[in-house]
Length: 186
Figure 1 (tube, rainbow, N blue to C red):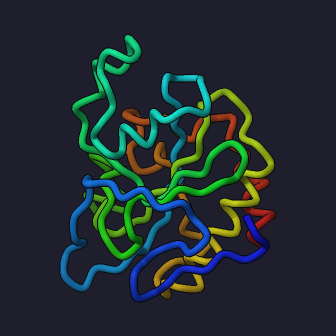
Figure 2: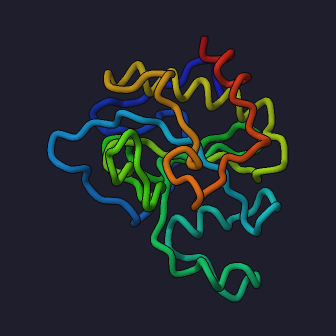
């Protein structure tokens, strides 16, 4: 990724990202703006990196027979706004102004349905595997670009999936270095 990322505010697209449109999104509720950034962790199969499987999951084309673990998730209708691969490369699945289906049952400060008012960023990783320097750099750049584009966002409103779905989700997990991200955003 370059030193500065740019988002087209009219389209909600991250200009430097590979674009793979997911069918798993819809419009945010009327007049709803993104207010939170949610950091997730994902690997398919679990603990394996690279390959086409995350794209396939988010596009609804994950073949259930390709891996034993896929049968349980192949029919899910899920997405995220962006995936940051291990090398820091970004893929965008849903425009930022729209509602990606990333958080599931969730709440923040008493507000339910965090998908309505959040942006979901997946990091290719696993709860117990350290994330890469390139991922932290790309994540910090993306958060800065999002905050510059959407006035309701701020670096202080970046949470883990586990923070909005405690007991149900654990990602990005204990391997995610929150102090490192905070330092990059300072």
